[in-house]
Image (cartoon, rainbow, N blue to C red; front, side):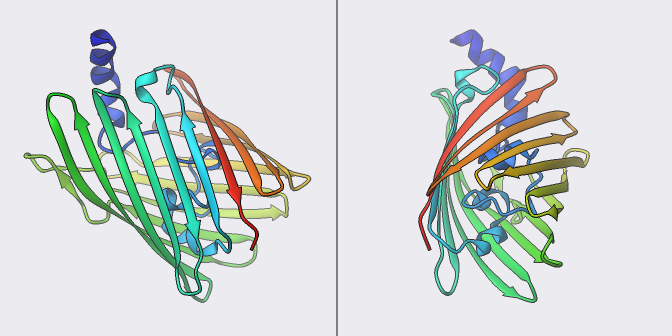
Length: 270
């Protein structure tokens, strides 16, 4: 255990600590996380809160990454629910990443509303706790702000600013990741979705992300994606039956190999 924890600290902590881990929801991951202009309810709570305004029914989903890169210490468990109301749509998300020696836990509340002229806005407030055994824990409130605009029936633009409040943590007041993501989605055919976005974290070069989704018989969705900096290839499938949906996604890392994740969701009738 000591060796594995040391390996984790040296290799993984700089990348995944402070809120940066595997993403949420198999659709978003399979599309290379190029979903800032794609409604991925109820996971829009984590990707772009404005997308929640498009939801018109109660939806809930559970997402699991059993072993990221084959390590049980990099396990993620998350759940999200979307509740539409006549005035504003509400989303709630919970997630946990890590293991006993290092763990991140978050609770998110999202509010979204369609404004006018095809424009939607949303905000997500997340209370996140970071715990390191023998070193204690720290808490912080993060703010994500999102916008989404329908250019026409087939083109949608999206923007999200993550950690828009520029939150800091710890005695040294270290700044948590601050980023902006701008993207577009396009439906050239009714059953074909193309998505692309550019994300810029203030600490790193801009990352290009693209995704393609092909839907077959309104029941099976095949997805592939790509992102650079770091270079990542993704793929997945979504299977819908009645009010239930099963999702699988995987993504590759040039050095660390393949990671699997699964999701089970339910969408109640309008």
